[in-house]
Image 1 (cartoon, helix red, strand yellow):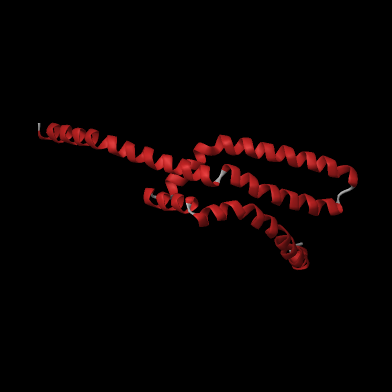
Image 2: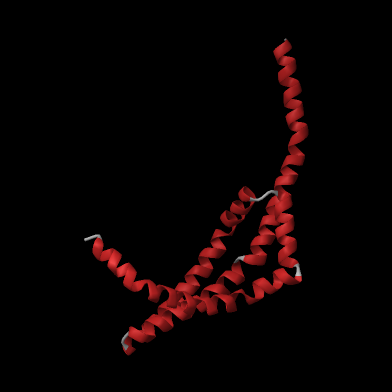
Length: 155
């Protein structure tokens, strides 16, 4: 009898507490989706485009003229594929945010991206990425002799 009362009280307590927990989870999910909306879809594509153009420009230097048109066409197809994939992945991406950040952290991050500084970061990130591509290409080019030596040492 004692265990039945404990089980009943525990069950009532769980049921009584469940709605707020579900409400908190829904609120947190909504904030994660808002963060995703602020940062992911459009910005991800805007950041990828300059990187893809930069890689294509580097490849154009060594690629025969006949293949350049095919490479440009392939780049367009890849960008479209990524856009569709990101759209399909939104629930999984939102879950990553809810699993990683507390609701308070999500509040702060969303507030930052809505602030003038956050909007500037998002707006200018494609330009930053475009400017970073040549810097990274130069760095990798400078490392190429050392990497080649290291690879030869593995033989």
